Image (cartoon, rainbow, N blue to C red; front, side, top):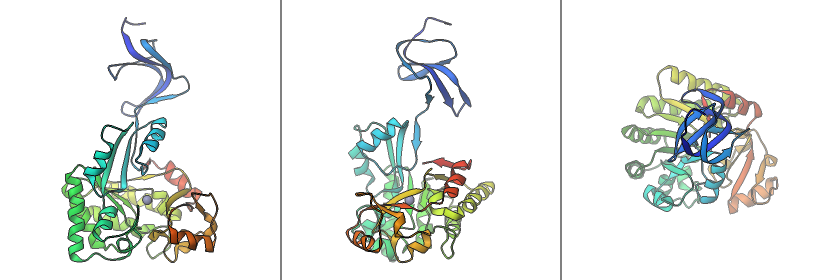
Length: 336
Ligand SMILES: [Zn+2]
């Protein structure tokens, strides 16, 4: 006991990990007035104490890729140590409304990007619930629509959006020029572009390699930082190559980063463009790798057709395990 300070709270015996200082050791932590005041091998005295033996004590995690932006999800996130949950991929169309809904009534910090998808859906009157199912998915924007989309994204950034989100595989009708135009707006606000790539897997045309090239080019041309989301689920058998492209872009001085999630299944809307003609070949899977969320059943040709008509969420067992391993082990990826 080095002094007679009594802290509000002491966490005893936890493995303290602090990436900033490089600390990774068993320590006692003294907290007062909501701030860490001491990290010590010595015993600390507190009005309250929590035995953290066998547990990790660290700063709150920031989840860059969190679509579940409601109180149920925030609670689960908090129990996992996530103190900031961000919706940066799909993002939101009306930034003010989204923040107003959450201000003062959430367990964790939250934030969202200005979403190219929801703004495009709004401008093109797409009836999709979360992801586009009609014009916003399949049609090129007219000149005036493009101006409206740009204005919508810019408004979001002016109203406090943290980044610009894209899901180019969901908005396949979006031209390369439209992508560049939105990147230019992001650059103006020094906002990063969080992109679900236009292409997936290793098969040309529109492989994940081609799609990675599209957005690295957009970043280089516009100056907007680029963050490629879930590189393993879009990279699939080309994940090692797309990771290499990210590393090489960084070596050239570009602000390009990426993330992955550490499992082999993803979830998305069955009525989205991801299941347009030819999906089996692109994913390298058949109906049996699709699992209906509501019932857990695996699909076949007829249930697939039925659910695609009604719409809803489907689990897609499509990411090769070696792609997940390559992404998780890569020093380039954040888990998100
Ligand atoms: Zn995605």
